Image (cartoon, rainbow, N blue to C red; front, side, top):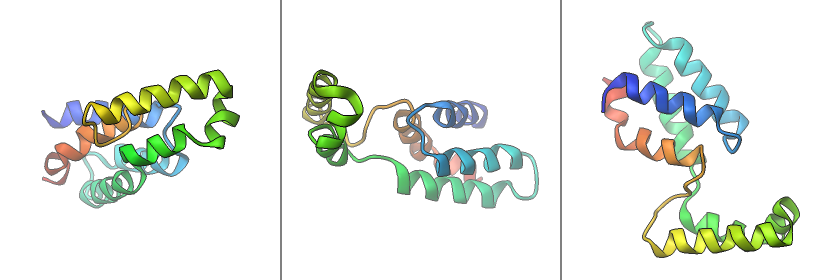
Length: 116
């Protein structure tokens, strides 16, 4: 993977409805810093924020089976979401596969490119 591909992953992660506000803001700071003297520190901050915000599979499963999920998705939606989370865990996934977490996993796997 190259840096430009990672930048596209960062943009996709930040654009995802499931991306939290703090991570969106940290991604925006990184994207603004690309090509400047501040890029490396912005990359370090972005990676730290991703590591803090990415949802481990057990957290996803717990949320999917919670009252919060029912309130958020409705009873039927929460049932489908819980089944998806359970299938994801059974498949060996380590993290959530939402629009923010999936690119975040890829970014973390190639973080050395951002830190170079």
